[in-house]
Image 1: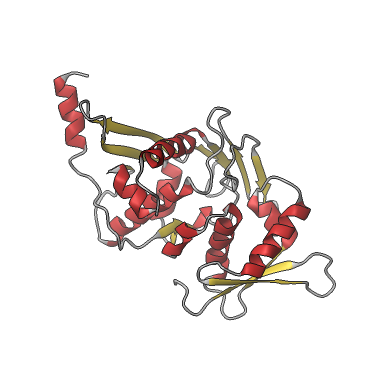
Image 2: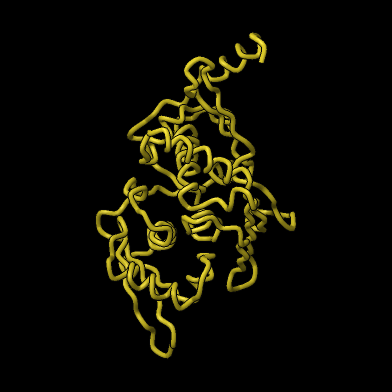
Length: 282
């Protein structure tokens, strides 16, 4: 890279996003209940194929064999980006960008991750999965039959040649995600304690509860276990999934939302009821 090129790149990173400890967290609404991410910490290459019970909406997600499918932990990066975009829009900033410049240290702090050397390595792997995972869906495809995209169109990191330390990175968001965040009602607030959830199913259940039970009143929202299984996109057998969800409901540790198992009259399979706790985020 020539000196002039290095100067241009350096100037691009002069406008870093500041780390805001009190940045209101926002999640993209459409991502909160559909099976867009792997819920497993191990590498997943098996595609996700989902169709809504009424047959109107469908999602297909495929991961790159080398990197695997983007996980629900990788989605923390998208939550941070959605929060930044929503905050910009709230403050009336014109031309909210699709390309964000930030320091990886600040990103890791914002999503509750350590800032060790290993954490930076894992961050790079997560960004690679967000770039290489392909999503096809008719959600918000309007007059098109389907939309095809990756979560990120790309990412770049500027490294100091002498110290080999990061001088900042650029994350370019997909147009589908960017539009979804900025559209009317496109985001919902989430509890910062979400980042403390360690299980993939717990994280996904929190997002489903926030989406459906957040404004459902005292009765909350109930969903049948088979439907929940299909919505999760989880690998494995339904019987195992039902057992694990029952254990999560028994522990009842989701921030802001209470879980309980019930068996409706005349039904063979149980349902999961989600109720908003009195102190939950609105």
